[in-house]
Structures are given as structure tokens and as C-alpha cells.
Amino acid sequence: MKNVADALLAARAGGSVIPVADQAAQNLTLSDAYEVQAIVVRKTGAVGGWKVGAAGPVATPVWAPIFSLDIVADGVDLARPPEAKVGIEVEIAFKLHEPLSAESLGKADIQDVFSSAHLVVEYVESRLERPADATDGWKLADNQINGGLVVGEAIGNWQNLNLGKQRVRLSIDGTPTIDEMRHNPGGDPLRLLRWAASRGTGHCGGLRSGQYVTTGSLSGIQWYRGGTRIRAELPDIGAYVRLDL
Image (tube, rainbow, N blue to C red; front, side, top):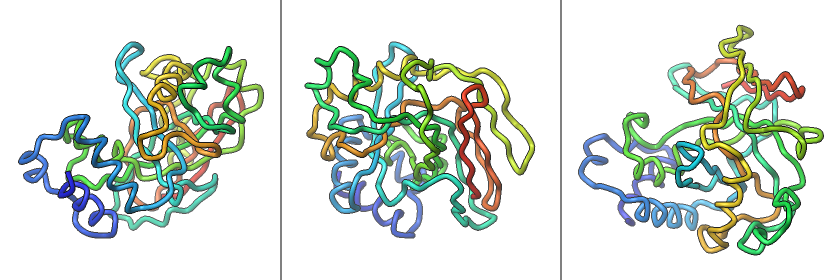
């Protein structure tokens, strides 16, 4: 898997994305993808968060690291050129105040290992040509085509909220494009967090204190050009995130 990891690292460093033909020439299983993730993490730097998600409420989740250098605060200007195409996903993330591991599963309430919950916007920038058409293995090898995470302020009283179902409002250059109740496709976020805890601490260092763990998109992926102004809100609980692409 070193050749795949090297190609992804080169793309991260500003080189060309991996062509569709190269993707088609090498089938990647999920096991292969996790091996690639581990190689890329060893050569890239600290992990500041994780994205955990599932296609359905009973589907087996997958996970991928998010690098610390790609986690930024509300109000950021990513300063992408006009020709850039960036994906946007509205999500909930939980911040760990202690490591998440198999031992965490023994707690009466897994929420106790988290210090806060946050509305976040994941921005998607893939190292793959035509990422929407890539196989599951290639997407997972590319850290689930993650670009980074924009983190909003902590959500008050989060332990008593249904964070898997919320009204979502997404405004683009001041115009609302989504304003409706949305569900997390993976179901209960706590199920996803328990699954991540059951993976242990081996993969890419595991889930550590201070990291953010995202639990699936409430908006689906939306693609916009560089220079676009984004505002994501959960209006019923007063949470928002702003960023410029």
C-alpha cells in the first residue's frame, strides 16, 4: 500500500490528484484503506480529530483521521481560488476530555468521556480525481476525502438534546439553500461513538484527549466554488458556524 500512500502524500503536498485510471487499476479493500491511512498519518503529523460515519442506522461504520493542522475555528477564511471546488457538510462533533477506548464502553454513560459538543462544518477536498465516483476503499484511504474541520462554539445542554435529528439551515452568500429538519444517516451518534471506542487505541494512535469526533452529516455533501461565504446553523439550539471558502 506504500505506492497509494505516496501518491496521496504527493497530492497533499500540492501535486496532482490521483487519476481515475490509476484508481481503477488498483482495487482497495477497507483493510487496505486503513493501512494507507496509517502510513499517511506517520508522515503527515498529529491527528486532531476523527470522522466516524455509517450509511444507515445498523450499517457498520467507518472512520478516518483528521489532521490537527486542518482543524480551524469559526469565521475562518480558507482563501481558496475561484476555480476550486470545495464540499461542505454540516455535522456535530464531540470533544474528548479523556481517551476513548474499550474501557470507555464500561461507563454507564459514554457521554462522560466528552467535555463538549459542537456544530462543525467539514470541508471536503479530495486527493482523488472525481471523488464522488471513487470506490469506498479509495475514499477511505483518502481519509474519507476530508479536507478539514471548522469548529463552532460549544453547544449548551448537549447531553439532553437529540443531536441525530435537528433543523439545519445552510446559507450561501446570504441566501438559505437548506432550511429543514434533517437526520444523521448513521442514526444515533452515540452508537457511532461506541463503535469507535470498540476499535481500541491502535489505529493511528486511537482517539485521544482533546480530539474532536464527528458523527455523520446532517446536510449531505454540497459543493461550492472558492470565494463562497458559508453560514451553517442549527437554529432550534442557537448554534452556528461561519466560513469563507
